[in-house]
Image 1 (tube, rainbow, N blue to C red):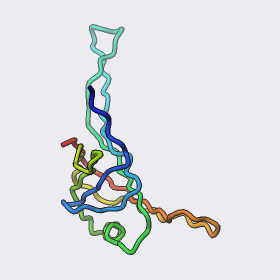
Image 2: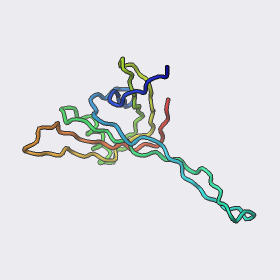
Image 3: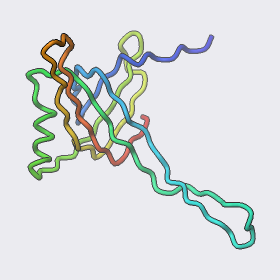
Image 4: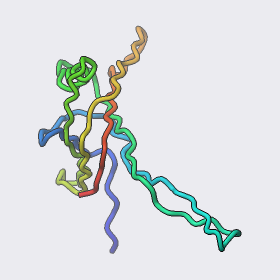
Length: 140
């Protein structure tokens, strides 16, 4: 019997080995390779394609606004010119809450913070988002 795929709602995010709990969403992480097109002089009908530089999209984290200011304070440090880069992990958990898959990112720093949408007639949780720019991401 084949293994069942993991569910997308059980995950943790770590920065420098410390778990940051309570994210409602983590998205955007992946990798891209630049495509370099090249035409050889002896083959005018076809373009050859080679892999170029790798790039890694920004990671977006969303969570409810609370009394914890650690990630917001990190963003303010960067705004003030103190660029502190951190390593981190996105950890997908299995149905028993055990680590199933880990993606490690490197040289991350917060490039964007977005406050919650507020509505006087609303009843939802106030959600903020933090965008982390990374230089590399690997599946462990």
